[in-house]
Each structure stands twice: as C-alpha cells, then as structure tokens.
Amino acid sequence: MANSLTDVFGAAAAVAKGMSVTLREMMSPTVTENYPDEPPKFQERFRGAHVLQRDENGLEKCVACFLCAAACPSNCIYIEAAENTELVRISGGERFAKTYNIDYNRCIFCGYCVEACPTDAITHGHGFEIASYNTSTLIYRKEDMLAAVPAGAKPPVVHEPAEAGAH
Ligand code: SF4
Ligand code: SF4
Image (tube, rainbow, N blue to C red; front, top):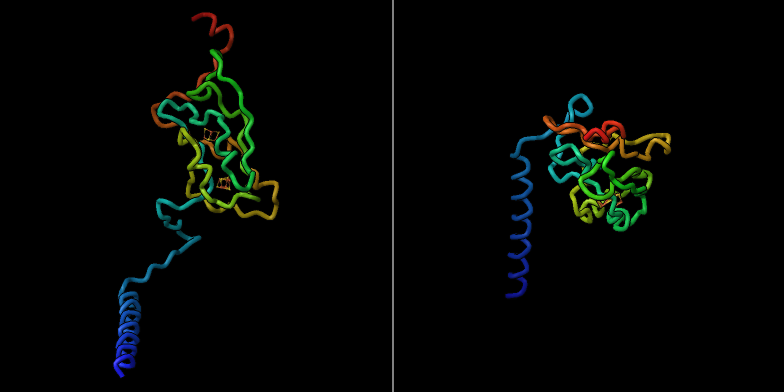
C-alpha cells in the first residue's frame, strides 16, 4: 500500500513538473524569424562557413602548419604552403598558405580544425547560405574565406625587387 501511494505521488509530481515547463513556454514570447526577408539571428557559437582571419596589421594569421588538415575527420582541407620572403610577406610566420581550400561537399562543421589551429587563423563565421546544385562551387578557396583587412591596417605589401633593393 505504501509503495502504491509513493508511486502515485511520484507520478503526480512528474506530471506537475512537466506541465510547469509547458506553461512556462506558453507564457514566454513567441520568436519568429522572418528569414529570408530579414537576416536570421545566430548564437555566438554557431558554426557556419569558415573565415580565415588576419592579424591587426592585416597579415594572414595562417602559417600553413597543416594542423587543421590533420585534425579534420572529413579530410576536406587542402593546403599548399609557401615561404614568406623579404620581398613578399603574407603572414606573420615563416610560411603562409599559398592555397587553402575547404571542400564543403564533405565538411561536417565539427569545429575540430578551429580547435586545432595554434594561431586562431581558422574560425567559424555565421555564413550558412552555401547550398548549391553544382558541387564544384562548394570548394571554397582562400580568397572566398579570407577576412577583410582591418580598418587602419595597411594591406600586405609585396615589394618589387627594385623597390626592395632601394631600402
Ligand atoms: S569543421 Fe570539421 S569537417 Fe569541416 S573542415 Fe573543420 S575539421 Fe574538417
Ligand atoms: S589554419 Fe591554423 S592550423 Fe590550419 S594551417 Fe593555418 S595556422 Fe595551421
């Protein structure tokens, strides 16, 4: 008898708890996204299309270490590295990514590449409108993902040999 009463009170408490959640949600304001007429709102942590970041001087943060490609479970990052020289400085490190592609046919937006990057070069942006009927357009190149040069920073300088010799 005691067990039966305990069961009944337990069940009633569970129903009351469930109904309290339902009532609370009924009272909260309805949020309607008017996409595509208005841009959708994202949580800060939303993992959208990637952005390759620049530092405060406008140099690319990627130093072509390949750690993101190694961490990627989908094997969808392709990088070709090149050396910075006295004439051409693209990144703040020794090397920069001459080619940096992400194949969005395969990317699962897991964020492992972002976590692996030692320079915070690769990040998730909020871009999400990347669906396409043409799969070849889903291979994003470095130029598609590179952040704009920050205001006040000079864009990376590529010195001509004659100009470099003058200094
Ligand atoms: S988000 Fe995941 S699957 Fe996509 S490129 Fe990064 S590591 Fe690879
Ligand atoms: S994005 Fe980051 S992890 Fe990937 S190659 Fe560039 S510096 Fe290395």
